[in-house]
Length: 300
Image (cartoon, rainbow, N blue to C red; front, side, top):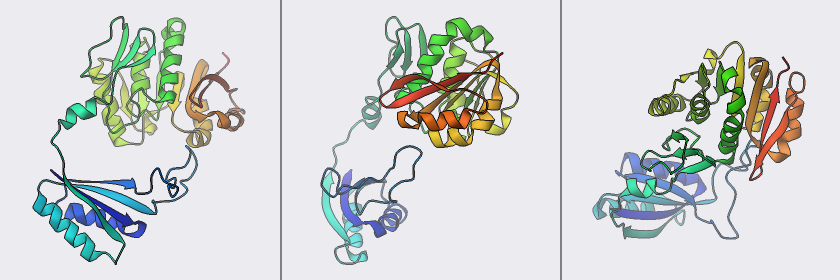
């Protein structure tokens, strides 16, 4: 394989990338901040729940992969001729050593210990010794591999409360389920009637596949399928949608039931308390790496 590296100004990145893929047969185009780790580096993504400070980097580095030198050289020649002077710069044209990319990707994901005996384990790894509760979960298009602090806190809450409460978890709702990991964990720890809902079709496909791989019953669908009351409502999304959804999520919690919310930064706790105050009293139940878990119970 041959790797072509171009530096391009903000206004040209989208058209340049599209042409490289559609017309010049590039196998892939990845885009990076050309000024990363320099005084000119600019943030592209804002904090969770806040708008991004800008849409694109001032200059981007395009790493373009071709299957032969002829295509890569032709693409470099076209790009330099197409762009206004100085707007696209050739940074490198080099051979790339063949690698087992599947193995390289898999090496990034190792088993994750949630609590003693409770593990998230990718399918290509052996189950760690002493694991009594194991979720087999492979990285995919949906959020929720078990590595993010918000997911880990939700999983810890489920594991800690299941010994006393699982028999009462006859209906469970995972709202904004992503990969379905929270729904799967609830079912694994003894819950029944577990539902997982999401607006993303890829998330629902991943949730169904992951539930099947873990041999647990999870009913996955769009948010419209959620109805009635649940003994446990889980929502690991972000503070802004959790605030908007406060009336809806609150009404799903049955008397004696629990609401578990994540995706919240520590500084956002008061805003969430205020949003849910008309119906439920939220409290911080866990904290990890600047993120918090907030829970509430409805009186019987």
